[in-house]
Length: 473
Image (cartoon, rainbow, N blue to C red; front, side, top):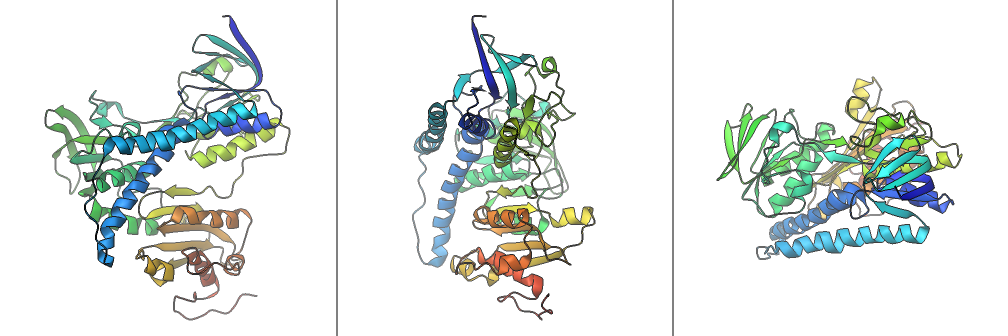
């Protein structure tokens, strides 16, 4: 093999964990090579996930708000959909611009990049696409994850899509089935519903978004039931069969019909770590039963000079978690006393309304026998929410009954994802509710609901009636 390279640090994967790790290392003078399979850097998040989905969700929001404006005295004509132009906006003006920006950052900061799949030959060597051998002193594996499509549903018909295919918007089907009531299915389903598809969701458990707080899910589910054709809970998909008329789906559930035909089916039942085929065993590494690479608080694997971050290193599979882990991994390489120990990893579901939470949830508190005071501020009492006709929201704060320390916050409502960072900071800093309520929030804003939730720890909030408790000393 004629092409042999030697580097201090090899980073495998160019997503939101890999490329920040490579840039951070290069900034500190570490000779770094970034290897990625995709033609463009950015990983699943930028190329086939977070970014294109949010661009489409923005379009869906515009469509919905234009229709809802009729209730406020302004009527627009029905939207005209230009799919080629829409695809060009998402892939050209959004995705291409951002991926190109990452490539420029790598070039400017001295990160060498190489396209291809890296496979371990031993604990200090990988071979990329069988043509380039790379010898490294340290390695960070950030290979990400892949959509999980159970084998029984892999019927060889492109009308059965995973999230990658659905985000390319091949067409707008008259009838779309979404298998899985998690955040990916609901976000993409919302996009297609706004564009005119009759969307049906099938979820095997007894509730949408099984991991989210029920108080937060309730307003979203109410809105989605009005926008979607149907939502079937506690329902199994027993089979998919291709026919000239569409995909025939066999269902089993209390309220579900035994069989329905759809123009397209989106399978969104989760993701799996992209750890297979990397030759990990040759490097002395093993995965757990789910395919994750076990790591310690320094993100080290069983082989100390090899680290793993992001989706391949364990849940939650969130881009911002991978980016935060990247900094920890590189700081460990630099000899800093760094470790992975966040108190709060925020999660956001970009439906309409959005759902966001950080820290302890009420369900987790109950399961762990952690005493909490649950403070709920309804957005019907928010002047800003009333003025924009979005009173379905709720801000929920969990505090320690004795110390009033903020343990968790959940928000459902317009722009919840933009609001949650304040609560992450409060939890990480060990703030008490008084710290939040005495931090003056601008009026009129939705962020005031966080302040008023905190006020409830010491009695009732200004805009929610009730008897005041004694002020804590």
